[in-house]
Image (cartoon, rainbow, N blue to C red; front, side, top):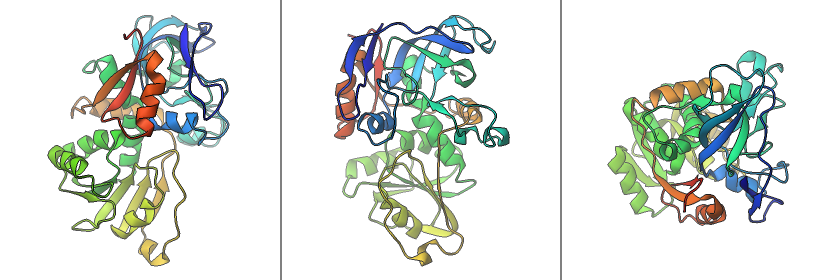
Amino acid sequence: MRAMVLDKSGQSLQLRDVPRPKPGRGQLLVRVSACAVCRTDLHVVDGELPNPKLPLIPGHQIVGRVEDIGEEAESKFKIGDRVGIPWLGWTDGECVYCQSNRENLCDHALFTGYTIDGGYAEFTVADARFCFHLPDRYNDVAVAPLLCAGLIGYRSYRKTGGARRLGIYGFGNAAHLIAQIALYEGRDLFVFTRPGDIAMQQAAKKLGAAWAGGSDEMPPEKLDAAIIFASVGALVPAALRALAKGGIVVCGGIHMSDIPSFPYADLWEERVITSVANLTRRDGDEFFEIAPRVPVQTRTETFSLEQANTALDRFRTGELKATAVLVMGAE
């Protein structure tokens, strides 16, 4: 099968013919139809995340169809079913985190496209327990971005509780998806973009934001919660200053630059800073139930498998205006 392979962090992916994987115990063999490109893929390729499996096939927003089923795989899937494969690829089920419904923090977790091979390939294998049935409303390309930007964004959003005035810093793929759910649930949305990015601010207002401005500005009223999707640590103190008493700042990325120091007074009055690590299967079940009801709309741009480096380069330089999705068999 054809696959795009990372041999060493910081290098371009290489197109290779590699053996088709076989499903092991509890696994599905999936013929990949689409795989969305995520910022985390950039962090892996660029060496910002430590100790990836090398050589590695990246990609963790995978849509495909079950080609074969390994022994003792969960019976909820049959050959031909469409499945989604997310970032969290395996947990031990035995550690204190798994036993307390926090499998996203499992000590021995494996991650698709990072510590196990992912979806920049024509076939992949995945633990059936961590695969999802996908809503029929979406085609393969449209649903692919929901498998990370949607899922991690949803977990970040749920950590804000019942916040009425919600700020979002960074209006990329995850923010665009979660903003739609926040508006559907009646939240007042305040969007922060790069200073001077008038086009993105106008897009946020068109979507329904009550206010949109630069990340160097203060909102017209204090926020009950803020989610930071941009991987810029300096936004944490900025978001804290925008919070009302008892508010929460949720850092929604897997990687962020260092957070600068800030006065304790900005944290006082029971403000909270928290990160989001990975996801749970419950997050996925809840998200895929609500997404088609909103309905959450994705914005995509397709590339062939061979164009994976082009998609990553355009993501890295900020040239993408939608989520890049690799489509197997595309011209």
